[in-house]
Image (cartoon, rainbow, N blue to C red; front, side, top):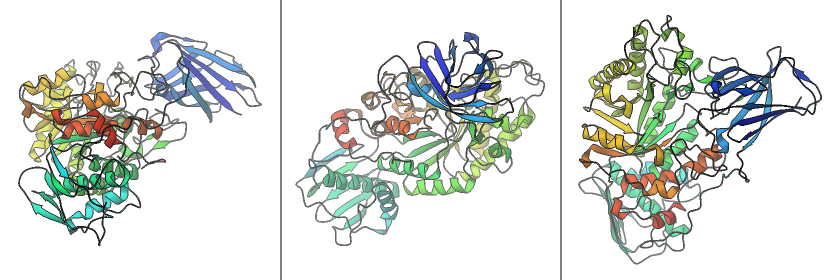
Length: 606
Ligand code: ACM
């Protein structure tokens, strides 16, 4: 039996299930998933909706229908939650459920959208760009004054303190040397303030106040060396100095490991890329509706059940997975190792446990956390039913405390992220325990409680912008994502703000409006030049309230890592430069030239 699913988007979603096998098929249902969510109210022709949970859809053919060999069952979905704009938003995996309950995989065809073409998956080409002072550096430093050139060294004689950097260099550039016992000597010196100075001469010197600054100087030296080796327009300077310090303290990257699971090797590679770009905060989005990835010893069900999607499981296949169970989670030891690796490269990991919304997976694993008396269904914006932890349920407060106790134990850094985004206004409207209290007030009470707990532990609460009412500006940092006006308003209210604007810095947004570009466009599309050129500081009355910038990788469409590679590189580097380089010192053509030498996503994963 061979089944193939054809699909096309015309403003309605047209499907054809083609039977390419030798046997007829009857009494079956068809299940598919992908980013797009079917709107049950919009109607379906020639099919009946059996079940929809977010982007998982199950439909049945008309009563008595038989799918004969060589024939097709064609049906039309009348509407979806957000119209499709890119091929990657369509169905990406499908299977059939046979009358006895067994499943059979279905090959899914690409979804056409009316434009001729094929998926665009190669690297973004920004052209040759322009080389400045014979250097190719991202992010561009604060002061560059170098002169002359000398034979490109095979490497340097390095102090012991360079061990973590040598590890980084070897991971990123296999087979290329940075250390050479016969090369020029690199001396470590001391200077005050953030950043570093890198001096060129017979000897090289990196002066910095601390290990972080010394490491940043090594990254710059590594970039100078590689540019001299690989771009004939570049040189290794004979004399002069680079004196440098970052614009912002927070230069972040967020990765959603809930929608897709990333292997530890992939996380390590991403950390290495971050270090090479002088990014210093890795925001790890560990939980969401689609999966729970953080091992919690007090609640093994969270990962025994909540980390897996599949046919017949409490969480159905979603976002490109088939009938077979798929998923994974990180043990606490995995995460401790990651924290240590990141620390050696100047990166702090900020774990996010997203509460009280985006908790479908947690509630699937621990249904006892629900108010058993609830009657209605509240759909989240991503079309999950009843996905918010109800703060009026006593077991929820205990759950949150025990989970965050373990988070605090595993992650020693200053910041812990509590989520707080996208809680539906009707979240607990039918809960007798919530007794008509409004959702915003209930959410605020939970977040206030959590914030107090984190403060007692000496930590700073990080959260998405919607969490403001519960958290208050002290010992907190908020991420503004929906619009820039929110960032400015929250800063005026006294919050420390990180700009992570969806329209430009959500790296899952497509690069261009073309159907065959991968990604989504619900917040717009963001060409590399737009991501590079966006100025986060506009409108801030007190610039000190702008703590920094962050790129966000949401993974709904990242099951295919070629999609990940096209969307993330080199836009991540564009955000890194926004985080480091003064606005007046930025130049896109120079960035384009340097971007050619940056590490990318290895074929076949990290
Ligand atoms: C978000 O994009 N929901 C923070």
